[in-house]
Every structure is written in C-alpha cells, then in structure tokens.
Length: 190
Length: 132
Image (cartoon, rainbow over all chains, first blue to last red):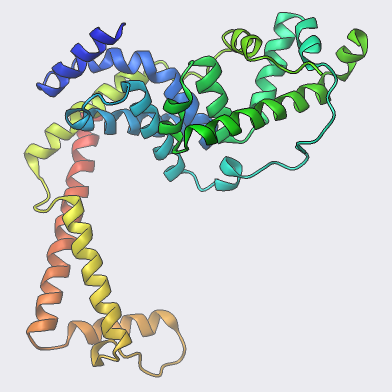
C-alpha cells in the first residue's frame, strides 16, 4: 500500500466509511504490537495497548491533518498508551546495571560478520532485548522501519539530537552485549 | 577499532522477526472501532470528558479549600483514630449540611457521578452484547 492509497483510506474514514481501516491495521499492527510489547513486556498487555491505540487513532483520524506520516502519528499513540499502561518506568528509561560505556571493544563487526545467519539473528535479537524499552524501540524504528531521527523524535517525544545520542548509546550497548556473549566466536576469529 | 556499522545493522536487522499479535487482532480492532457508534446511540454523557474532568477538578479543589479554611462540614472530629470512620463521618457531615452552597455541591457531585457511571455501565453492556 503506497501513501496515496493510505491517504485515500484516511479520507474515506473522515467521510464516515471506516471499512478500509482494516488495511491500515494489517499494515502497521506488527510494529505497533512490537513497540507495545517492548514497553509492557507482556503479550496480553501489548495486545490491549496496540488495540487501544488503533481505536484511539481511528477516532482521531478526522483531526489528523497529515502533517506527519500516519505511521509516525500512530506509533506515537502506541508509545504513549503503552507508557501510560505500564508502571515499569525504570525498565523504560533507566540504565541497566553492567552496561558501562567505556568498555573496551574488540572488532565486533568482524565477530558478528563471522558467525552464521541463524546465530547472528539470535544474538542480535538478544542484544536488542537487553536494551531499555525506549532504546530498543528507537533502534527498531531506525534500523528496521527506517524512520528518520525527526520521526522517531515525534514518536518518542525526544528531540532529533537526543534520538541520535540514544541511538549511539544503544549501538554501543549492543556491541558490548555481543562482545560479552560472543567470546567463543571472537576467540576463533581474532 | 571497527564497530557495528549502520549499513550492516540495517541489513542484519531486516532479517529479524517482529513480535506478532494474535491472528484475530485485526478483527478485534475492527469490532472495537465499530462499537462506540452503537453505544453512543444508547447513551452519551451530557458533558465531554474534558469538561467533566475540569468540573471534577474544581469540585475537588473547592472541597480541599474548605478543608484548608476549616469549614465546619469538613473539619475532622476527634475520633478513635480510625481513618475510615473519620472519612465516613466527614462524608455524613457534608451530606447533612444545609444551605445553597452545599446543596449545589451535592447535586453537582451526584449528577456527575451518575452521568459517568451510567456511561461506563452502558458502554460495558453494549460491548458485552456485541462480543456475544
């Protein structure tokens, strides 16, 4: 579905025809659920949050003027709904222990490149899981959904500069995690 | 020192699988978005949520002010120290206070609470009916 089709669906919803909304739900449900899941850390809560966010967005579509992309606007609703839902603020915004910034790194790129695809997926997934919820969402939105720093800023309520810093820190934390957990592979490569 | 490059991260992360909601997720969302229209036809709160919360805010603030100023209706009487009893006692004192000020407060409080509860109750019933 391209942006023209999306705009057409949104226009229909504004005119009272909501049937096309299912297409938007199908398109964005994975990322919406993923954002909610990273914050709530619970499948049931994440489903509830994602569902609530879609319903809220549906109701608010008449006031959505298209200043931002629909996805950016929707993810912002998911993000704020999930944060309201969870009381686990520490996990969302605070640093995890043992993640010092000044650790020394071997050549992590070589290590990760050297392992097979399945292992890489597994360790990368684990590295993302080890991040704070907000960081993992930023990483996913930037590298997976290819959102810009400005768009991620709109979703998470940060400035683009802040997003950039958080992205840098997250990458560093992921590196540290990978280094720590890929020692055996590293020994073979280095 | 060679670190994780942006290009490689993008490439590797595109292979990752996203968390997926349950298969009937879209159906449930669509049911939900079509539901408020049904409930609105049965009952709609007289006041919008924003106005309602503003009135609640003013109402609570007024009571708070009365307590601060030592108004008779809200003055906490010496009791056995049981917080619940003191609370109930204060409530009864408030309900029994005469005069237009307390009467209007009481009427406003009861009307707003009824309005909210009826709305919540009917919405819930409609949702249950549509789910069946």
